[in-house]
View (tube, one colour):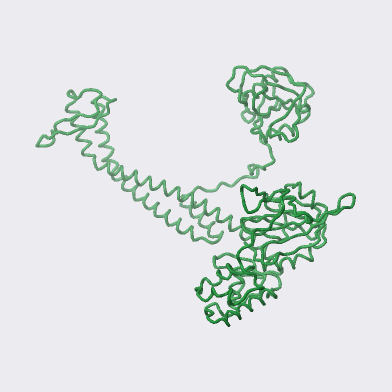
Length: 573
């Protein structure tokens, strides 16, 4: 969903009375690309830098949120004092003002660049044009045209070589005289600033040039006047509409169109944008499921093709049953003449009147009698399996044809209902596995949860072991102050916590050594015979500011020398 400059112009007019002089109660980030401004009763204003769905719209934020230091410093507690659209561009500026404790006010601009894969939200100091923060930082080595990072002077995106509609003349439109009918809308979009394919087709319809080519200078001059009037006073509609473009995609439009009928109308432009964005999210999810399903079918098709190749090879081998039987019988007749450990033997063919010689391959690791038995066994197996192999080949070939038909049909699916129906059909014919329904107890783990390894000592004390550096930090931070922290001295390893669980007594030396042996086992020193392990209470464990994940400092520690050993897991008791 790419919003056109005219749609953004209308959107700013619609949003202005709703957000003007509103207090920014909170500001936070979602999914690294969506910045939300909490405007109190007005709702949450979403500034999205998504490459496919960049927009400015009121939306309900999800529960997961991330703090942004530069947004908290310059926006939170401030107010929006204006919103403006940059003419003929897909760029919107939100002006915010915040006062500090002594009453000094600071004006900033939130520059929302809605330009597809280059979309970004940049906070710029109004007085100095210095960048204070951005959702996407771009260094000079990544983009030689302009860099975007804090402290850099903000530069707008480079202007495209397009003609502003205000200075459009008949000579500017001379390219239309040689332009084919189906390419005129795209040609207008590439030559005139502020146009998108929908508005370009509307202009051609208004001028009567959808099918007729302008041939005279007067016709071009009249069309140039139509375009200038169109931009001076666009035919905006009340609310918004959803229309289809030439690529079978839905776009949001703020114009009253005459060349086509809208797919759906909305009371506000924001509602139209939110609905189209939701549709695209569902379409992307469907395409992802469709792609995964196609991958499963193609993997099954590859397996089936290999199966067919093996069956055909077995059928070809079954056709040599008489030859294998003759070789086996010849070997049995000449056992005494066959030396050991040879790879082949040449024997006279007793079953041929000409008594021609036959070269018989042998397995040098087997005796002559064993080689003869092998040939006779292969002959019996080939003769017995010939009719079965034919049926297997027929079934495999039918499965291959079905898979190819399903793959072709899958590429033409356009709705979720059709995709679900096809998945159920494939599960019914057992071409794919049935999706297992997860019970509530086996729901997906949340990113913030910790799931350490769990053990029990012989005395019944619980021991928890972190699985990675991030979990090590969360495990130690969430432990009680009187729990025992253990870690191998001078060697990378997991954080190990011996849980007190409210016990008044302290762990015995035997229990400490068992937990220490577990800390040694889950470290780089697992292969050593004796490993030094430090232990102390969690209250004496600190993480230095700015330290990398998993790095801590400890005090009042004691050291045990233990041999690495794994204890009994808690779920195995």
